Image (cartoon, rainbow, N blue to C red; front, top):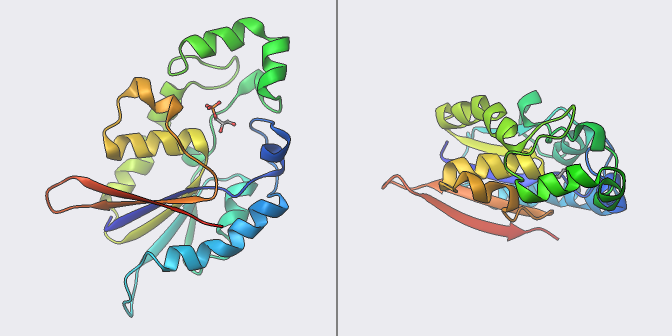
Length: 196
Ligand code: G3H
């Protein structure tokens, strides 16, 4: 792609309550982000007549709602859905610590390889996003990816050459547009734009 714009969904109702996973809608703050996003994205695009821009989301409500005001064709990828937290889906981190102390400790100890019971690990997510990365490399023009914290860590790490061990703790804040521009020398130039 000529440029890749990465963003998490706007704040969701689950984010607001500190719950992981689920399929909630945007909070009021998240809704505001969705409304601000088109202008922020368009500001990062060149002024050309026939601009080809694709918007890729996951299949979860919070990314679809975040992308809905972007005036470009959209594609939904199951491969961009958030890490499946299995038996911990819908809990706070505190509740996980109380109900499943061994799981909590195991994840803290090896966040990259830890797999939630009946769910996924970061290693699983890194594998799962591979087809998306292949298509991002094949895509000729501009792609806006509206997805989730864990999957965006994996996508970002691929393009920026982040070591696997560092992927699960990469900073991936809400309400921030991350611009990745491939340079002629083969490197990626990164810029971050908070949107608020
Ligand atoms: O709900 C899941 C989070 O977005 C993933 O964050 O892997 O740091 O727990 P975490």
